[in-house]
Image 1 (tube, rainbow, N blue to C red):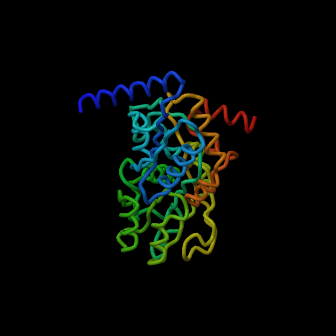
Image 2: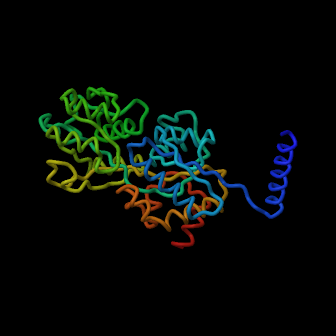
Image 3: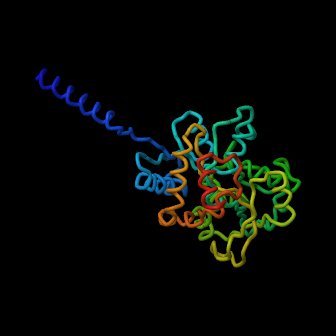
Length: 317
């Protein structure tokens, strides 16, 4: 038995020596940190991993379910992931050491591409009479979990409107908690930052008369002047039950981020593979259809990775 094991070990050693001698390369493991399995990030992250495995030789890619943007920054910092899906505002805060990253500036993030808009949706019960951000004064408003991207969005929008949390009855609730409380009449309005249509808002609209409150005009301009990662978008009429007109609001953007220590060649090949297989992203989730090379640098809030820069120089010099 011992001699058989010895022969097997010798054989494995010989095989490895042959592989090394022939120039064979070890697989490059790439983990894509995404989000919760019920959100948009996870199916897109899975599609990206599939694209990389099929179209980038030597890469062994996988997707990881996570707590999304803030958690994903931490996973990159801890070198537990190579790529991550992160909102461009969260990436901005990390790179500049502000908001939830106050005092701990992160220098190890580089952008690959912005992907699709994460729309800030201010949803209010129709009975509340809220039709503008100014109308939130004195109302019960869900502003997101403490320290979340949604909470920062809510605070910045209120600030641009000349309001603070002292002017409202702020409720620090997750999406699911906000949806339940709005449905049951325990709050008057909620900020939700997500791709549209958002399932939680669809569910509320079926059970309760709600309105999507606009965040546009001068308010949107003041917001973008102070926080350059915001862009203006329109929620098309009919996105939610009872929404008969298009609503102008603002959005941040979901983006694909890499660690700075990934090689230029690897990131170039990953970027090239992604844009060469956009149909697979659209198949994975409706928001995947928003991804394009033409908009990939819109709202880019951190420096590009050299590998991505190289790709864009080739396709759009």
